[in-house]
Amino acid sequence: MHKRVAITGLGVISPLGNDVAAFWSAIKAGRSGAGPVTKFDASRLEARVACEVKDFEPALYMDKKEARKMALFSQYAVAAAVQAWRDAGLPEREGGAAEEPAGEGMRGPFRAERIGAVIGNGIGGIDVCLESHKKLLEAGPGRMLPMTVPLMIANEAAGNVAMRLGLGGPALTAVTACASGSDALGQALDLIRSGRCDAVLAGGTEAAINEFAMGGFCRLQALSTAYNETPEKASRPFDKGRDGFVIGEGAAVLMLEDWDRAVARGARIYAELAGYGASCDAYHLTAPDPGASGCVRAMRAALEDAGLGPEEIAYYNAHGTSTAINDPVETLMLKKAFGAHASRLKVSSTKSMTGHMIAAAGAVEALVCVKAIEEGFVPPTINLESPDIESGCDLDYVPNHGVFLPIAAAAAGSLGFGGHNAVLVFKKASL
Figure 1 (tube, helix red, strand yellow):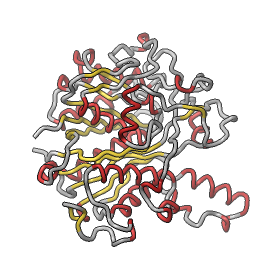
Figure 2 (cartoon, helix red, strand yellow):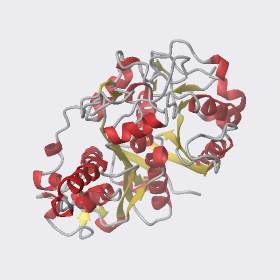
Figure 3 (tube, one colour):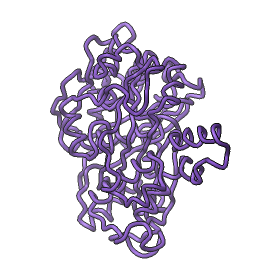
Figure 4 (tube, helix red, strand yellow):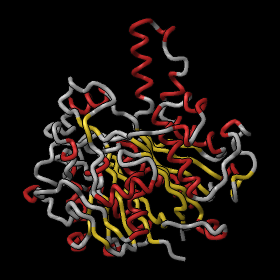
């Protein structure tokens, strides 16, 4: 019998708002976070639309000295982690990260060495890498940023979260492309179940809206190019008119705790993280297995891990990238994994609003599932005007307007380059 794992805190930095209340309000309203690219001159690119984080203020979560030692992806992760920590009702150290060595003493009801951090990331501090590479070419290695390496490497998000909050347990990084945030939460679940940790801050982060990353995706013909003049229409999962994904950025972090400890300390429990399944297609670098066998394995493993049958899932938050290949394959996965129940399942892609936040996507969509269960509300798939029935996209994708529905259990899936598949299952909190 597995230990139960409670979700007691939520944090998010996103194109739809920089706290959970603003983010969830926008999701419920079906608002798009897409707009023209403003972070750089995108005129040389075919795709000029992105879901950018706006009005981000690092000073709300870290002092200026700390922020200068972090690339943007780390700043996003730390901000979301601090939100989740505070939301869980846990005390912060006075004076920030330098107050005392991590791993010493207590962090509220937990020993610091029993709290971990697992943060998914795709490409690290690519902004720092690009800036230093430019200086290298222009003026030589002596003009590169002195902190280039520690700022850009992918594990620094988890390390900075641990330092900011004084966590002395494992600080790990999941790098499985678009499945990274989901895999991070799955790894955190296993750390608590195994008894290695009593609590873990887990999620994903990404900050890769730049000409290099978008240019690379354009070369793969993966980004939407047909809606540059109407960016809010560009992300349209399962729709006939979809022509690629819209890149997004941000972070989401969830506070996970041993259920019994959470109950004992009187914590508010949003939901239970009940199941995790992972697999690899072992098929292609960028394309999913057209038979959906890999993601079917991940879904079945997650349901078995949660002790649930397919018919007990009321809502599925889809990977739903708005690409020609992903959407039909994911729909096929649901039909194979859920059988007859697939036609009764509520399915939506919130990437229609947030864009594809890459490594942060799975964590953001986990947060959506938690809020959907808490409030009994299924978010919409916006911009779904003509479902692509010819490609098999014929399920209930909750088009354009969300619906209120009691949700006892929900699932979310992530499908990443390299054939990585990860599925998480959530249950309504009940003692």
